[in-house]
Length: 251
Image 1: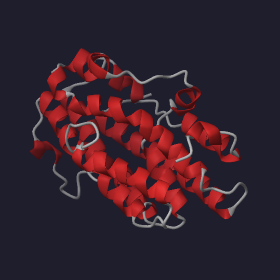
Image 2: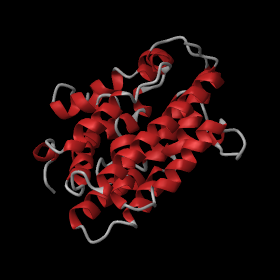
Image 3: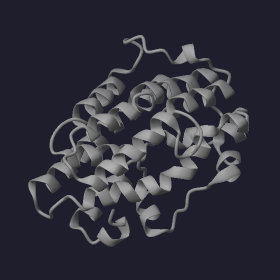
Image 4: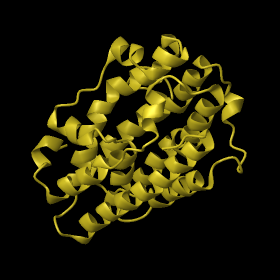
């Protein structure tokens, strides 16, 4: 696959990076420092699990099922799906299970993360429904961008592409994590963090390459890619507002 760096002159790049710059929620700093109680942590992490962590392999599969014979895209999505569902690339385990292992380290059980169909905040459910709907809607490029650029990406996207932000790896990625530093999660329970540190850098490159190599400038496809990601940001911000409200956080 064409390396993402060779495609960064694409006019879509700056528009998407401008959007990703805004993928930051006012309540996020509360998760990076001490002060939250167990109920607040559970509200946050149960939402994360039920909204997208549990079913992210399924969302990738839905997108993959709509990709035509574009071999490099199919390979990259399949590799991402393989890692998310099995942990085969990082030699760990299924990422949803690793998430529960991390929660076990905080003293929660798997049953704490059950989906009872009524617990989720309505805006969280709306975001989840949006992801399921748009992950299987044409054009396939917009579904791939939604999942691999928007969902898997962060407000660090611009700096990561520029090479000025480098993900922590290995034990440094674990020991500097707020759950270990402030909330007593044993480092041994942070396998998911280790896995992300190992594979997400390559996933970021693949994400941008898949999208940029298959989006003709000023085309309907390019417009749809941006429109879906822009709509996702609206749903995501409402979702995060709803979770913050449930956690009792205020600006």
